[in-house]
Amino acid sequence: MQENISAISTAAGTGGVAIIRISGKNSLEIAKKMFSPSGKTPVEKFLPNYMYAGEIEGDGFKDYGMCVYFKAPKSFTGEDVIEFHCHGGVQIARGILSKTLSLGARAAEKGEFTKRAFINGKLTLSSAEGMIDMINAESLATLRAGSMLYNEKLSKEIVVIQNSLKDILAEIAADIDYPEEDLEGVNAQKTAEDIKEISEKLSALASSYSCGKKIKEGVTVAICGKPNTGKSSLLNALLGYDKAIVSSEAGTTRDAVEGAIDIDGVKYNLTDTAGIRESAGNIESIGIERAKKILSSADIILSVTDGNGEADLSGANGVVIKVFNKCDLKKSDGKYDCIVSAKTGEGLENLKKVIAQKAVGELSLDKAYIIEKRHYSALVRANEALQSALNNVNLFSTDILAIDLKEAWEALGEITGETANEQIISTVFEKFCVGK
Image 1 (cartoon, rainbow, N blue to C red):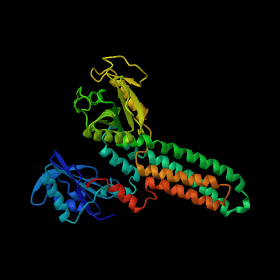
Image 2: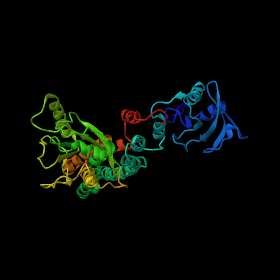
Image 3: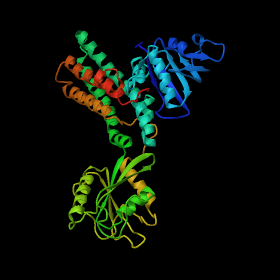
Image 4: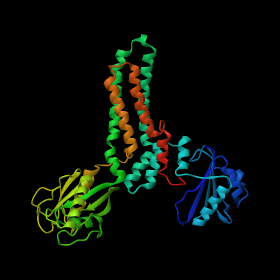
């Protein structure tokens, strides 16, 4: 792509500095018409990766700022890139952008700079997804997982697996081209072993999606129990501030009350639900029905009791953690996962540790977690193709076997972008903002 595109690359609103970015073959020519250096070096003589001070011409005004030239192919997009760093006023940035458009640049679309970087081989598709995950991260764990993607941790593992598939396909091709060598009997057993090894690697990668999904989207935690067991007090204690109304009157919580906390870098979305009991008024009954719906979708259910029995948790699909509350008033009378006092704070830190352990376990800082559903789907399809190959390795001819292996290779290529179609690529870059 050589058409010039331009956009404001900093966040909307007033700030200290705004950046207007241009990419394309005529970027330097546009800069020559807009930038007047303070020093003696003319724009056409600018050294790459150096910042030069001077006046930037906007639409009807001039601003004093900086200009930097990134020469192709050693730039983010792989093309010639110019950046103007101006004062961070909204109208200043818009005026300079408007000037670039009047000089022949086109307004960039969402993610178009990064898309050009991908097309020009500067990063893989999964790396681009890691970048947007980092930008949109709401927790440290999401940021770390996105960083792994951005730094090609996953794509490198995928390429290794793809190369193993290539080796098998090469052996099959040799067997097809030179049947007189009579290699098929030996190769069938070895090929089956190699395919099984690759399949196990894919299974291990795919298995991390359960945890990766929680890292990216957060863990949903439902606080459930009978009325007046201190569920709202427990929510407030975990949040560290008063979010839910606390009263000794049973049935105070009529609807779900939500809040979020961070445990070891992972976001946990807490929901305090209406107390579940048989006898309730019409409005409270609606809250109880909503509580039951929340139960069915929560990752973690905190079943809270004060020793007066536990609520009916039928329909719960997540992990149940039995919590005895109000230990400051009386001793627990049964086996519980955690014993706490929402009032005094006793046991709260231990409860957080138990929640984290049940939800995600021990997180590794150097592991490439699968956090994108698209990647998980590709891994599953690749593994299904390998399982088909294993089932057929001794039943059909090697050219049929090669079809399954190539299908697996192509599914994995969708992760890195090597075999991704235009629809997949467009969907990925639509997640980006304009200017990135």
